[in-house]
Length: 226
Length: 112
Picture (spheres, rainbow over the protein chains, first blue to last red):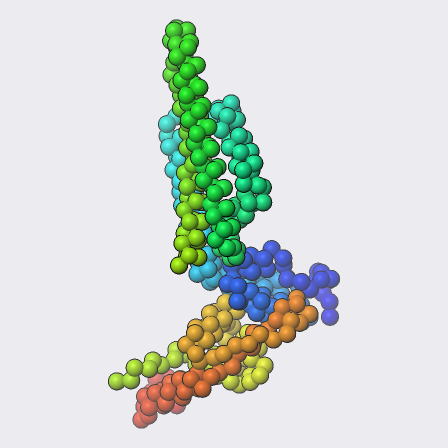
């Protein structure tokens, strides 16, 4: 029997199924997701589509939540740490006055594009992609050489950003020194120094984030070596 | 005093369900049996967490079946109660029987 609002395909909702699969440990992915798919398909034969869908969502979400903390604890703590860092940074910026004074497009362009291009140039786009995936996927199976290559991505990105930021600070300092009399005359010394330091700050932020990424991969390397 | 611990109520229920189902004991059938016999709606997560725990304790063993179409090409995981599991069940049953001996419930609506 097919109900009026029942779709032709008896596949479970893809997003929920993917989320559940992601949360489950490898050995339970197949049996748990399979059991739910089988029962969902049976329920569609005897129940309204929405009832069956609600049943599936409830079962999948409860199961996912049960395994999420157990299986993805490292990732959740990593994201929490990252969010706390960014929130604290944002809060400090907001408390210090206008948010706009912390945004300077030329300074951003001095630091980020060259750092990213340098990293991709040295490590290859594929290694960069893998390094990024490693932060959010604990189940990636990699050998020590691949892990070290991924760690290298964060070392290069972090250090390039930091040095480019420092370079921006020095260039700003030189520019101020050359025109110091004129800058003082126009009462622009404060903003000029501010922009120089801002470039350095833009370099420091990715350095901190990359340091976290580096240490996360280093931990995986230590685990592999043990 | 015995060093061996007794099974929890849910563990006992699951082991008994697996035994009742015999060669057809996998997640979905165990859940269905619990719903039919005990009117108990168990989430898949709770069921597999307990089965995993029992497997670690050596009370059940599992084996993967063939993938089927209605499961989206995914295999079933069949469970079987081991001799250790059966001993644990008997121990828990004996303990309960022992504790129930000579006891009469007198509350309203609870008569043995």
